Image (cartoon, rainbow, N blue to C red; front, side):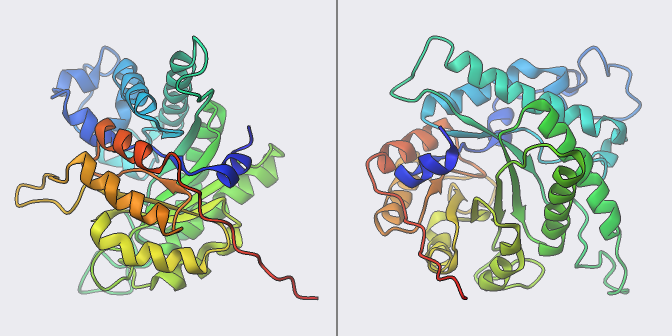
Length: 339
């Protein structure tokens, strides 16, 4: 079924944290290197995206755990799969391959999960190609003594995202998800890259999901935009959904999701962290707590897509899925056409 048709009928569930699940495996340097990179000239531990090539079964099994928990949408393990981000490991040349491999891991997980037919009434799941915010920003200077300096140009960001998009599409992604946006200009470069890619290749354009992040109680993104300004800045992309993820727990995110639900003409997504991190950087919010928060949002008519970000696990997603299963999704607002 077309995802727009499904969204008109029910609230869809997106998966939870990939990094949290990878940490449970307590992987060492050798696990990241695999055989292919055993003699790589620098450390690669922590390059989670590389596991799609060197240890794909771990990634596939994590995807399957989220599918089993009730996820309708699973994200590729590609948060840092651009040549800009991979420069931290001197693996820029692997960017395209990482995205293809990650999309294939997710598609394999879906195929394996539904191999014996429907599961609890579900017959399929969607693979969202995750496009992260980059570790360099177009709106902010990394040099406090030179506010006009930029570590990267718009054209370089577009080039990096274009390569990522090509890999995700070639790997079989069903959706492109621009997520954890703290700098809207980076997001606009990703949108430009997506539109240009499909225009130039002639391939059928995939739906776009866009998810920003409010960094603190100010209600603004890191680059200083209010939520409404952020939405207005990206609405030209005609996204399938706009939403928020990361940075905040559900309790702190609620007012922002309510505001977004009132201004967005598209579907609204929300996948908060499992509360705010404690002094050790860990997340303490229990699955049933997260589930109840998102159930309330659903009952209030705020959301169409819900899930979890940092600190969330398959248990969190299971509780969320159970809590929203029978709740009517937020209806799309009627937009008047000017003549």
